[in-house]
Length: 225
Figure 1 (tube, one colour):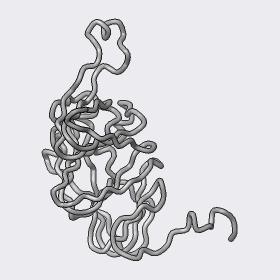
Figure 2 (cartoon, rainbow, N blue to C red):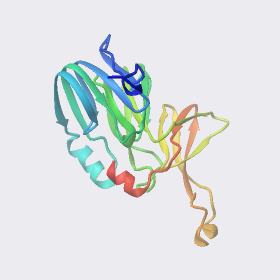
Figure 3 (cartoon, rainbow, N blue to C red):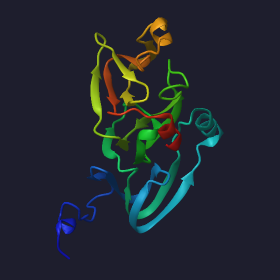
Figure 4 (cartoon, rainbow, N blue to C red):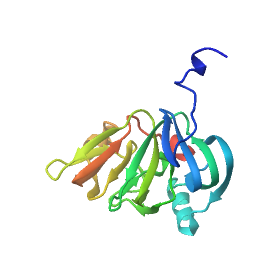
């Protein structure tokens, strides 16, 4: 067979080491030697001897997901082989988390991660159920985290001198040591007249980074994720 489809740009090569790598802009390859975790339904192909098992979130996790529409529905992948993960052709990125790091991320942006990472579903301080959701996933430990994003994300530095305000429907996540609160950017009178469509933002203060995607999640998309 000949043609661009069969060029090296698209052809996958055998993994040289266990773990996660970006296959292309829209997918992540994971060479499994033991176990790892991924978003339920995100596997698009695999080879080798792998088993896929749904992972429960516990009663608290299921309750939070039912109340907010947010959460992290996961499956455990076990065995030896290679698996490819993707979700709705969104762009894929890999974040390396080191001991002492804390990365808070919206569950809708998680694709897969190493089993050496620990995650908890926690309340986002200062954020209500409207907007980006009351609960986000907080990752710690040592390993890699695969993320998805509609388009190429913006990584905006946050400093003590210059807080950053982000749309609650566009925020992907943020690093440790950032304080969050809700900020109202228009007056009650303006809201009564119809408003600008940008009434409330998530305010981040401190020293770190916030990741924002170049699109807003609609209520329909949030429910689908």
